[in-house]
Image 1 (tube, one colour):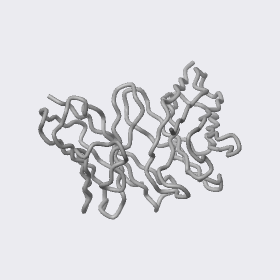
Image 2: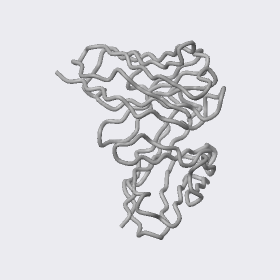
Image 3: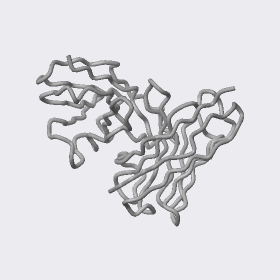
Image 4: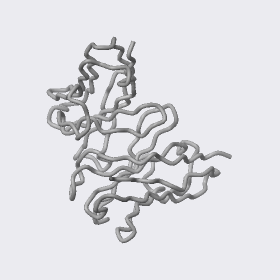
Length: 109
Length: 122
């Protein structure tokens, strides 16, 4: 089955740029979605289809996807961005097609 | 406003059965694929199952296949998860989620409920 690999943690100072990666075999041909989850809350979709943002998500959140790595980029990081972030893809060669990455804890220093 | 409200989470013994429900409001329920996603407290997200907008197609994670059954009642705007042969490793928060695009299996999970806690313990 398809595997998505995320770093367990990323740390960044306020005002800087955070980059969270999601690795997968030829992930560049898949559509990648990103979710933010704060403690005690349900996940929130922050980027879909590699680089699109749902309404209400700040422009500071952006995404890219190429080769074997997708990246969620958060510009001008704020304390409120501290959360767990998960990538997700659809694996159309599987009968259990929805795959989540293991998640990355973003710490704002 | 889209709202998803899960219910049915309780404490169950191993081997028991349980049915979760998810009540949906604020959108045309029978246009959208729906998902169940679970999360062991302190751990990551694990996709459990999905059902197409018309109920014709269902998919399951290997960890629950043969034990869990997803269903929906479009007349009641409700999603269900029948959980049989429960194991301790099924202990988790269970979230229902709405697909972003109508009449599509493959699209992001756009809206999520707040989750319901299932505890399997002797």
